[in-house]
Amino acid sequence: MNTLYDSESFAVVHLQAELPAGADAPQDGPQLARHGFEIVDKRSGKEVYLDGLWAELFQQRIAAWHENTPTQEEVEDTLEGYATLAQNPVVLH
Image 1 (cartoon, rainbow, N blue to C red):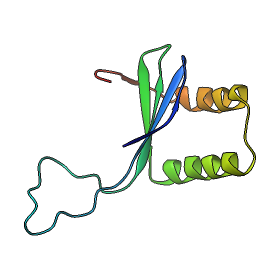
Image 2: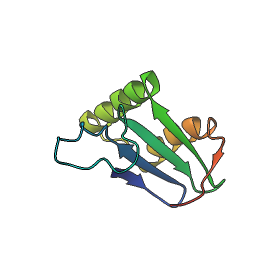
Image 3: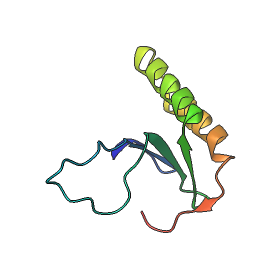
């Protein structure tokens, strides 16, 4: 888990798929099958988890941000668009 962005309004965390455990390593709990991004809208107390194609598209957006650094307003505007998908209340963070 890697925090990519944290502001007063939003937090973005990248959750990476975990490699299969080795023969001598215990498996404690479920393993992520693929990577994804959790976007938390702190204002509403809701979050959305992007995986699959949504995660790939969001990762492309992040790569573009690395090439052309956006303003905080541009980042917040983009996250606002994803926040409209947020339906799950944040239970523990």
